[in-house]
Image (cartoon, rainbow, N blue to C red; front, top):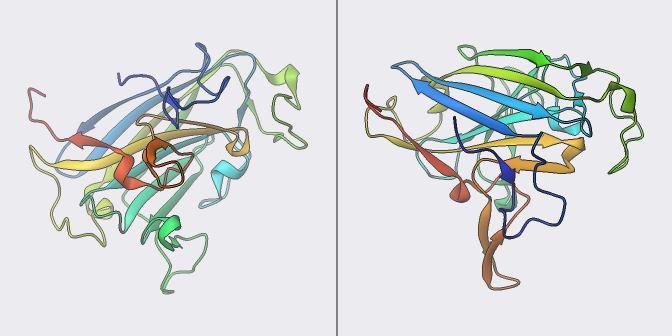
Length: 241
């Protein structure tokens, strides 16, 4: 398994109470072949955090309401035309391509903002996803009226966990980039993973989003996954790893 996720800003810059509690770990594993990058992830919850899943329509903005697992991929490390996948515990997915980061004037390309044939349309067909509730329960009522630190439906809380399995097509990941061929042994792609809870009030990630902050003239943690230059790497290994 990977190391557990931590606050998106990194341990050094995380505000008090922002880092995951011991019962709220997030971890993942990866494999690959000539066609797909495979990801398995486990998201765990303690009694203070419910699993929320309300969206059922494809390309809904998952993080706006739901417990959200996210994968980001930039196969040519260009910070352009990078891919994002979000999904909830009901296996509702949202696929996006960002022509460049939002902070640089980038825009979302997806089936949420455009129809097939329009310039900003993007979606995938070869991707495979699955989710499963491992323990506990899912709240589909939604956090209406939710206030930070106050759960709307505390009777629905309790230790819980859900698992994710993904098969991400190489041809769809490299679409629109200069990485014209699938990965081979030794290839390295920019990658990061994120977990969002409480309508964006909780942001945990695998690699801390640390970038140069000109206002304080130092590198610091940012609550912004759309900084591909801060992501980690996946290096594609051979049979022996």
